[in-house]
Amino acid sequence: MTLSLLPETNPDEPLQWSLVTSPFRVPASDPISSYKSTSRILNILARGEAEARGADEALLLNTNGEAAEAAGGNMFWVYREQICTVPTGRGVLPGITRAVVLEICQALGLTTNKRVIKPEMLRNAEGIFITNSALGIVPVVSFDGEPVAPSPLVDQIATAYNEMLMRE
Image: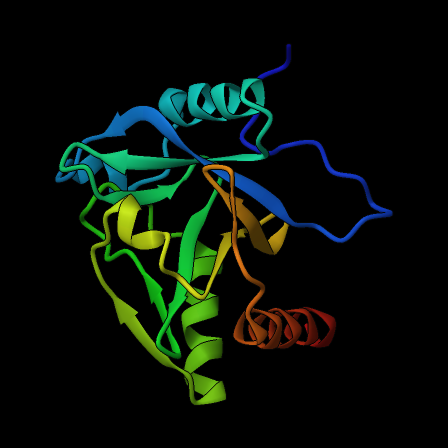
């Protein structure tokens, strides 16, 4: 088995992932979590464990039991027409694509909210997506085995993101 921060993808199919909660925890207030480093072993182990469970991606919780990030990217969710993401300083790497998505939301006039969320509340989301510099915006279609409804807001953000890439 090859361990990676990115799952294998099929270029003939639209990219969408199943997400499962990982048993691995990241420190909630570790200042190192704000920096990309070579010590991302928890992320790699979480991804491998997710794949062993038949999922594409792992949701890492912090030591407070709050959603932190995906093994290979940042997590966003839609709740009451707001685009939400976890604030930095909670075990989250402040990703480049995360920052771009927040800028796109502002340009589109979408309300954003950086908030803490427990995984049981994440089940109430009206859409979930992962951002990753290599893959862009990846919609989540299931979370811990339960379907996640597609959100038109996720499609709107993904379209704007792809258009931005084409311009640059």
